[in-house]
Length: 192
Ligand SMILES: NC(=O)c1ccc[n+]([C@@H]2O[C@H](COP(=O)([O-])OP(=O)(O)OC[C@H]3O[C@@H](n4cnc5c(N)ncnc54)[C@H](O)[C@@H]3O)[C@@H](O)[C@H]2O)c1
Image 1: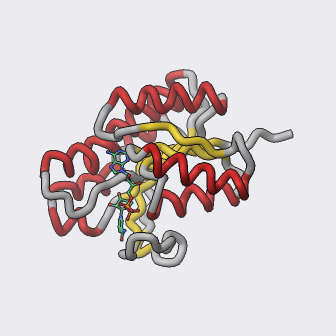
Image 2 (image 1 turned 90 degrees about the vertical axis):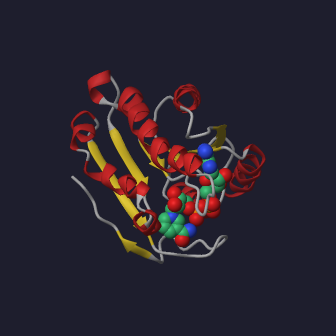
């Protein structure tokens, strides 16, 4: 019997990340919800267990601005599910007044995520390869500094040792609580 693939979704406890988790579960993935908000993540997991069964969705604490949290995240996910096929770097802060925090979460977070994916999923490191998807934002361009999040999609160096894909998506605008993920993608540029 084929083994279900496993995805880690950062910022998966609410909003776009939660919608992505549900879609993945519907499509037969097992999912690790990685979020800084532990209670919210655990509550979300309990809710999804009702539809998708225990053991198919778990929550692991991760502050994406801390590189060491990514190591723990991958190690605990691998321990539980025995594999990781997809990392979705989705966690982000919007309208954050502290520029340092914005940079740490929105910019360093996906970078740490990509590096952890290389380490734990990269074929050159003995992993099985997989897919990394970075959620960027049109707002990044407005605020300028973190437009670089979108540029991650074209960092080919990461692609080389992380087959199959590194992709950046730019969702359309929607209100908190809406699950407009599938309905309103304004752009889906896919780098090779
Ligand atoms: N909502 C939109 O209209 C929109 C549009 C374009 C792009 N985006 C991007 O999509 C992503 C998700 O947006 P959203 O609207 O669902 O946001 P949201 O605020 O609803 O959810 C963000 C999630 O990330 C978590 N999070 C915040 N800081 C974290 C950290 N340091 N470590 C781990 N988790 C953390 C939060 O707890 C929350 O669960 C963000 O990267 C955002 O920039 C959103």
